[in-house]
Image 1 (spheres, rainbow, N blue to C red):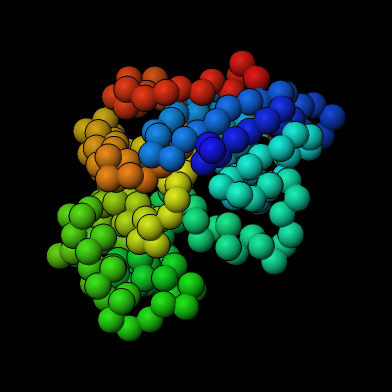
Image 2: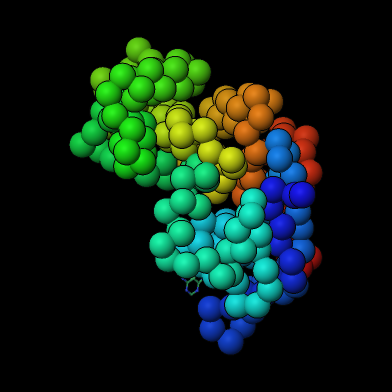
Length: 214
Ligand SMILES: Nc1ncnc2c1ncn2[C@@H]1O[C@H](COP(=O)(O)OP(=O)(O)OP(=O)(O)O)[C@@H](O)[C@H]1O
Ligand SMILES: [Mg+2]
Protein backbone atom coordinates (compact mmCIF):
# COMPACT_ATOMS: atom_id res chain seq x y z
CA UNK A 1 0.00 0.00 0.00
CA UNK A 2 1.22 3.51 -0.82
CA UNK A 3 1.84 5.91 2.06
CA UNK A 4 0.02 8.74 0.25
CA UNK A 5 -2.44 8.57 -2.63
CA UNK A 6 -4.12 11.47 -4.47
CA UNK A 7 -6.93 10.12 -6.69
CA UNK A 8 -8.73 12.45 -9.11
CA UNK A 9 -8.27 15.45 -6.81
CA UNK A 10 -9.89 18.73 -7.83
CA UNK A 11 -9.63 21.94 -5.83
CA UNK A 12 -11.16 25.35 -6.27
CA UNK A 13 -11.57 28.30 -3.92
CA UNK A 14 -13.81 30.32 -6.24
CA UNK A 15 -15.20 29.33 -9.64
CA UNK A 16 -11.74 28.65 -11.07
CA UNK A 17 -10.21 25.27 -10.42
CA UNK A 18 -6.57 25.39 -9.28
CA UNK A 19 -6.11 21.63 -9.42
CA UNK A 20 -7.87 19.40 -11.92
CA UNK A 21 -7.66 15.65 -11.74
CA UNK A 22 -4.41 15.45 -9.77
CA UNK A 23 -3.24 11.86 -9.38
CA UNK A 24 -0.08 10.64 -7.71
CA UNK A 25 1.19 8.26 -5.08
CA UNK A 26 4.10 8.45 -2.67
CA UNK A 27 5.69 5.38 -1.14
CA UNK A 28 7.23 5.16 2.32
CA UNK A 29 10.82 6.39 2.25
CA UNK A 30 10.50 8.28 -1.03
CA UNK A 31 11.70 11.84 -1.72
CA UNK A 32 9.50 13.72 -4.16
CA UNK A 33 9.37 17.26 -5.45
CA UNK A 34 6.04 19.00 -6.04
CA UNK A 35 6.64 21.65 -8.65
CA UNK A 36 4.80 24.16 -10.83
CA UNK A 37 4.84 27.95 -11.18
CA UNK A 38 3.66 30.43 -8.55
CA UNK A 39 -0.08 30.00 -8.00
CA UNK A 40 -0.15 26.46 -9.43
CA UNK A 41 -1.36 24.99 -6.13
CA UNK A 42 1.78 23.53 -4.50
CA UNK A 43 1.00 24.96 -1.05
CA UNK A 44 -2.65 23.99 -1.47
CA UNK A 45 -1.57 20.40 -2.23
CA UNK A 46 0.47 20.23 1.00
CA UNK A 47 -2.30 21.93 3.00
CA UNK A 48 -4.76 19.28 1.84
CA UNK A 49 -2.43 16.64 3.26
CA UNK A 50 -2.53 18.30 6.69
CA UNK A 51 -6.33 18.67 6.38
CA UNK A 52 -6.14 22.47 6.57
CA UNK A 53 -7.97 22.32 3.23
CA UNK A 54 -10.25 19.65 1.83
CA UNK A 55 -10.32 18.59 -1.83
CA UNK A 56 -13.40 19.87 -3.70
CA UNK A 57 -13.69 16.47 -5.39
CA UNK A 58 -11.65 13.32 -5.28
CA UNK A 59 -9.87 11.33 -2.60
CA UNK A 60 -6.67 11.74 -0.61
CA UNK A 61 -5.46 8.84 1.45
CA UNK A 62 -2.67 9.14 4.02
CA UNK A 63 -1.77 5.82 5.65
CA UNK A 64 -5.20 4.41 6.48
CA UNK A 65 -7.05 7.74 6.66
CA UNK A 66 -9.34 9.10 3.93
CA UNK A 67 -8.63 12.80 4.42
CA UNK A 68 -11.70 14.07 2.55
CA UNK A 69 -13.86 12.32 5.19
CA UNK A 70 -11.73 13.11 8.24
CA UNK A 71 -13.63 14.21 11.35
CA UNK A 72 -12.31 17.30 13.18
CA UNK A 73 -11.52 15.16 16.23
CA UNK A 74 -9.15 13.02 14.14
CA UNK A 75 -7.13 15.95 12.77
CA UNK A 76 -4.68 16.20 15.74
CA UNK A 77 -3.79 12.50 15.26
CA UNK A 78 -3.12 13.13 11.57
CA UNK A 79 -0.96 16.19 12.28
CA UNK A 80 1.25 14.25 14.70
CA UNK A 81 2.27 12.02 11.80
CA UNK A 82 3.32 14.99 9.67
CA UNK A 83 6.24 17.39 10.07
CA UNK A 84 5.95 20.74 8.30
CA UNK A 85 8.70 23.18 7.30
CA UNK A 86 7.85 26.61 5.85
CA UNK A 87 9.70 29.14 3.71
CA UNK A 88 9.68 31.69 6.55
CA UNK A 89 10.69 29.23 9.34
CA UNK A 90 7.84 30.28 11.72
CA UNK A 91 9.85 29.92 14.93
CA UNK A 92 8.46 31.46 18.10
CA UNK A 93 10.66 34.52 18.78
CA UNK A 94 10.24 34.52 22.57
CA UNK A 95 11.30 30.87 22.96
CA UNK A 96 14.82 29.47 22.80
CA UNK A 97 15.97 27.00 20.15
CA UNK A 98 15.47 24.18 22.65
CA UNK A 99 11.98 25.39 23.64
CA UNK A 100 10.93 25.80 20.00
CA UNK A 101 11.84 22.19 19.25
CA UNK A 102 10.39 20.87 22.53
CA UNK A 103 7.00 22.50 22.04
CA UNK A 104 5.61 19.90 19.65
CA UNK A 105 6.50 17.09 22.04
CA UNK A 106 4.88 18.92 24.97
CA UNK A 107 1.68 19.37 22.96
CA UNK A 108 1.69 15.58 22.45
CA UNK A 109 1.89 15.09 26.22
CA UNK A 110 5.57 14.18 26.44
CA UNK A 111 7.57 15.78 29.27
CA UNK A 112 10.73 15.56 31.35
CA UNK A 113 13.78 13.49 30.52
CA UNK A 114 12.34 12.15 27.23
CA UNK A 115 12.03 15.72 25.96
CA UNK A 116 15.61 16.51 26.98
CA UNK A 117 16.91 13.37 25.29
CA UNK A 118 14.93 13.67 22.03
CA UNK A 119 15.42 17.41 21.59
CA UNK A 120 19.15 17.14 22.34
CA UNK A 121 19.57 14.31 19.83
CA UNK A 122 17.75 16.07 17.00
CA UNK A 123 19.60 19.37 17.67
CA UNK A 124 22.91 17.49 17.46
CA UNK A 125 21.85 15.98 14.13
CA UNK A 126 21.29 19.46 12.65
CA UNK A 127 24.52 20.66 14.36
CA UNK A 128 22.80 23.23 16.55
CA UNK A 129 23.09 21.72 20.01
CA UNK A 130 25.59 24.37 21.09
CA UNK A 131 23.00 27.05 20.25
CA UNK A 132 20.18 25.44 22.21
CA UNK A 133 19.77 28.38 24.58
CA UNK A 134 19.84 31.08 21.90
CA UNK A 135 16.72 32.88 20.70
CA UNK A 136 15.83 32.72 16.96
CA UNK A 137 16.82 36.37 16.37
CA UNK A 138 20.42 35.45 17.24
CA UNK A 139 20.54 32.86 14.43
CA UNK A 140 21.17 33.12 10.69
CA UNK A 141 18.38 32.20 8.26
CA UNK A 142 19.98 28.82 7.55
CA UNK A 143 20.30 28.11 11.28
CA UNK A 144 16.67 29.08 11.86
CA UNK A 145 15.60 26.70 9.12
CA UNK A 146 17.68 23.91 10.72
CA UNK A 147 15.80 24.55 13.99
CA UNK A 148 12.51 24.39 12.05
CA UNK A 149 13.58 21.05 10.52
CA UNK A 150 14.49 19.76 13.98
CA UNK A 151 11.10 20.89 15.30
CA UNK A 152 9.34 19.14 12.42
CA UNK A 153 11.23 15.87 12.86
CA UNK A 154 11.57 15.55 16.65
CA UNK A 155 8.30 13.59 16.82
CA UNK A 156 9.58 11.18 14.19
CA UNK A 157 6.72 11.86 11.74
CA UNK A 158 5.76 9.57 8.86
CA UNK A 159 6.34 12.35 6.36
CA UNK A 160 8.13 15.69 6.19
CA UNK A 161 6.33 18.33 4.11
CA UNK A 162 8.61 21.19 3.14
CA UNK A 163 7.06 24.22 1.41
CA UNK A 164 9.75 26.18 -0.45
CA UNK A 165 12.14 25.58 2.49
CA UNK A 166 15.06 27.41 0.89
CA UNK A 167 13.04 30.29 -0.58
CA UNK A 168 14.59 32.83 1.82
CA UNK A 169 18.13 31.42 1.73
CA UNK A 170 21.18 31.94 -0.48
CA UNK A 171 22.49 29.18 -2.73
CA UNK A 172 25.17 27.79 -0.38
CA UNK A 173 22.82 27.75 2.59
CA UNK A 174 20.13 26.13 0.42
CA UNK A 175 22.54 23.31 -0.32
CA UNK A 176 23.20 22.77 3.39
CA UNK A 177 19.44 22.62 4.07
CA UNK A 178 18.89 20.22 1.17
CA UNK A 179 21.72 17.98 2.42
CA UNK A 180 20.11 17.86 5.88
CA UNK A 181 16.68 17.02 4.48
CA UNK A 182 18.30 14.36 2.25
CA UNK A 183 20.15 12.87 5.22
CA UNK A 184 16.88 12.41 7.13
CA UNK A 185 15.33 10.91 3.98
CA UNK A 186 18.26 8.46 3.80
CA UNK A 187 17.44 7.43 7.38
CA UNK A 188 13.84 6.66 6.34
CA UNK A 189 11.72 9.82 6.56
CA UNK A 190 9.44 10.28 3.54
CA UNK A 191 9.82 13.79 2.12
CA UNK A 192 7.54 15.91 -0.08
CA UNK A 193 9.20 19.17 -1.01
CA UNK A 194 7.28 21.90 -2.86
CA UNK A 195 9.36 24.31 -4.92
CA UNK A 196 9.43 26.19 -8.20
CA UNK A 197 13.25 26.35 -7.99
CA UNK A 198 14.79 24.24 -10.76
CA UNK A 199 18.27 24.41 -9.15
CA UNK A 200 16.89 22.78 -6.04
CA UNK A 201 15.23 20.05 -8.09
CA UNK A 202 18.49 19.39 -9.95
CA UNK A 203 20.29 19.19 -6.60
CA UNK A 204 17.83 16.63 -5.26
CA UNK A 205 17.83 14.02 -8.05
CA UNK A 206 14.41 12.70 -7.04
CA UNK A 207 11.00 12.10 -8.58
CA UNK A 208 9.23 15.28 -9.69
CA UNK A 209 5.46 15.77 -9.72
CA UNK A 210 4.51 18.76 -11.87
CA UNK A 211 1.03 19.79 -10.73
CA UNK A 212 0.51 22.16 -13.66
CA UNK A 213 0.02 19.00 -15.70
CA UNK A 214 -2.97 18.01 -13.53
N1 LIG B 1 -7.42 30.33 1.17
C1 LIG B 1 -7.52 30.69 -0.11
N2 LIG B 1 -8.62 31.33 -0.57
C2 LIG B 1 -8.73 31.69 -1.87
N3 LIG B 1 -7.79 31.44 -2.79
C3 LIG B 1 -6.67 30.82 -2.40
C4 LIG B 1 -6.47 30.43 -1.05
N4 LIG B 1 -5.26 29.80 -0.94
C5 LIG B 1 -4.74 29.84 -2.18
N5 LIG B 1 -5.57 30.44 -3.05
C6 LIG B 1 -5.31 30.62 -4.50
O1 LIG B 1 -5.02 29.36 -5.05
C7 LIG B 1 -3.98 29.42 -6.01
C8 LIG B 1 -2.89 28.45 -5.64
O2 LIG B 1 -2.24 28.90 -4.46
P1 LIG B 1 -1.02 28.14 -3.81
O3 LIG B 1 -0.61 28.96 -2.64
O4 LIG B 1 -1.38 26.73 -3.54
O5 LIG B 1 0.06 28.20 -4.98
P2 LIG B 1 1.61 27.84 -4.96
O6 LIG B 1 1.85 26.91 -6.11
O7 LIG B 1 2.01 27.37 -3.61
O8 LIG B 1 2.28 29.25 -5.30
P3 LIG B 1 3.69 29.88 -4.78
O9 LIG B 1 4.78 29.27 -5.63
O10 LIG B 1 3.55 31.34 -5.06
O11 LIG B 1 3.84 29.58 -3.33
C9 LIG B 1 -3.55 30.89 -6.04
O12 LIG B 1 -4.18 31.48 -7.16
C10 LIG B 1 -4.07 31.46 -4.77
O13 LIG B 1 -4.39 32.81 -4.90
MG1 LIG C 1 3.25 28.12 -2.17
